[in-house]
Length: 103
Image 1: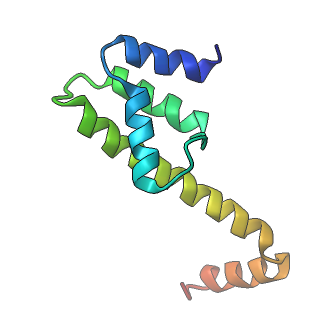
Image 2: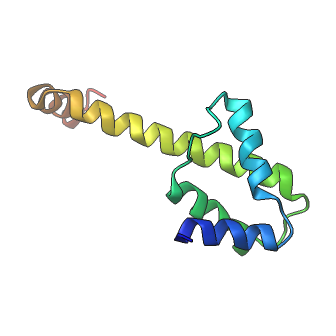
């Protein structure tokens, strides 16, 4: 079992069906059933769950945190993708505009 699987199992054994939650999130977002969320996101959410002392209801907490973490991860992926597709000259031009106080 990989590191991510250990984190998910630990949450499951603590009494919350994380697998059902992940499947619900995939269904809500229209993702394929075999879509794998990034391990870094899952591990981070599981670690937050174990560190947070006052969770009144696990299901809403997980859905809220998973959605937020996924959105952040996807946004970061988009930024990295865009960063690779922009010519270095254009990057320099944009950086120069912002350095001069234009942005």
